[in-house]
Image (cartoon, rainbow, N blue to C red; front, side):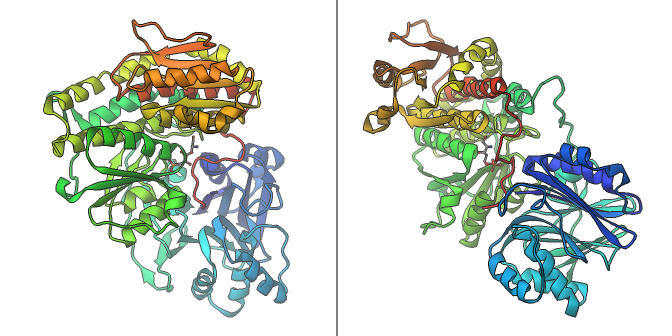
Amino acid sequence: MCGIIGISSNKSVSASIINSLKKLEYRGYDSAGIATLFEGEIKEVKSEGRVDTLEQNFDLKNLKGNIGIGHVRWATHGKPNSVNAHPHSSHNVSVVHNGIIENSTILKKYLTTKGHVFKSQTDTEVIVHLITENLKADDLEIAITKTLNQLHGSFALGIVFKDIPDLIVGARRGSPLAVGYGPNENYLGSDSYALKAMTNKITYLDDGEFCIIKKDQVLFFNEDGIKINKKILKLSSNEVSYEKGDFKHFMAKEIEEQPITIKTGIKEYIDKTNSEINIYNFPWKISEINSITLIGCGTAYHSCMMAKYWFEELTKLDINIDIASEFRYRKNRFKKDSLYIFVSQSGETADTYAALDLCKRNNMKTCAVVNVIESSIARDANFVLPIHCGPEIGVASTKAFLGQILILYILSLKFGSLRNEINKNTYKDKVKELLNLPSLIEKSLLIDNDIQAISSTFNEVKGSMFLGRGFSYPIALEGALKLKELSYVHAEGYPAGEMKHGPLALIEDGMPVVVLAPRDNYYKKTISNMQEVIARGAKVLLITNKSKDEIISENIWETIEVENTNEDLLPFLLTIPLQKLAYYSALKKGYDIDKPRNLAKSVTVE
Ligand code: M6R
């Protein structure tokens, strides 16, 4: 998953390319590079590391040219170094690529026999030489069509040509790509976010399509190389800030924004006066749905898991959950009365998109719970429930998680009510209690001092565990994911009741174990499991909710109490200390919190 930008203009493009690349760094930050066309030559600069490093290493102000492409990389083939950084160029062609070319080894052998010499270990370089080869015999459009048909795998491409110096070619299969329209210039970008500073007029390429971008014209072609017309969409002007403001990191800002996320979600979906949930334009009759499958990756998968508990509590629907990368290759039993819900912050995650595509090809009902409403998943699902949490820039998902689980909770309540599976008064009470959630989150956020002190312990050990039962189990998994992602500490989330079936062997003197034990139906059971780990030397951080009753255990290392609310809503509050624990633990280690090593915000490769 890399970021691509291309600009064809009547003025120098390098400054705009750099600005856009900085916005695209959430897609990858192993290396960065730019190629421009100037005075009949391809000028290429690239270096390992961030866009800032590229700026430090080269005098980019003097990188001239009115046509250029740029790239930020998340390595798939070949180490993240300057040789493997994009663009990759032959004497005539320069390419930036997001995706994976699956038949690159075979193509490389073929091209080597034709005399092409390869400099990098990337799959992308194969594309460069294949186009160069095909251009020997064919005109541009035919050579591009032929090249794209020879490539297996997924790609979004930006291509410039020394001998055709007035245009950029963009092509898409599997990986997203957008075209933007400006005054005397046009753009190519991995997403509208990268283009937003320059234009709000966008066209998304569909799979198999390619385009030719000149400063005053854009042409679109289908996979057979036949010209097609495409619609121009106007993006909504988004007021939400893309800046860190007074916060040290986007993650810190996004954690603190969670009360607003929940307030906005409530405003969008709840009629406060009548304590009623409104889901407008839902395209199916409730009687047409007897089972739901929720699909996502990473944190979004944890949201699916959380939803399973709520749906099972509030409805009699048959609920399944799946990790997108597993679902897409399994022999699924598609049933007509199933609803498939795809959960994704970015709406561009390749595995989740592939799972959606599979369901669509099997004529299933598809619904997307997404943050980015212009995304591929949002555009292709039958029905969309936006989470409205504004841009989430930190790689670790925080406010999007709470946004996703809010929408899924609201949906489960609505289904329970429409199917008459929860009592009307209980339904109204639960909707009313939801209205207090933003202020409860606000109060639960005021724990920085306690968490800061506790977080050092997690940095000094080789591993930690996060335990929970019932509603708290998905939150334990999410807490463990946050800690390993940010702090590079081994952290394992586990159902507390399963410890005795193996993982208890891991517990040794001083090992930190986070136990989520809110005073719900599972409380006593979880406390017993907690005592079992304390007895084996674990240092337990207990996270529970405030109560007048004392905690029924001894020898707990530290306790954090979140606000009190009903059992359904406690998972929202339990999440907050875990997010802060991971944040402060990484902060103490001096790690790059918004861009943890080896990761990217939007995972657009398999
Ligand atoms: O954009 P998505 O929600 O589809 O992303 C899914 C995962 O890649 C994402 O949640 C990832 O696990 C987060 N970085 C975790 O904090």
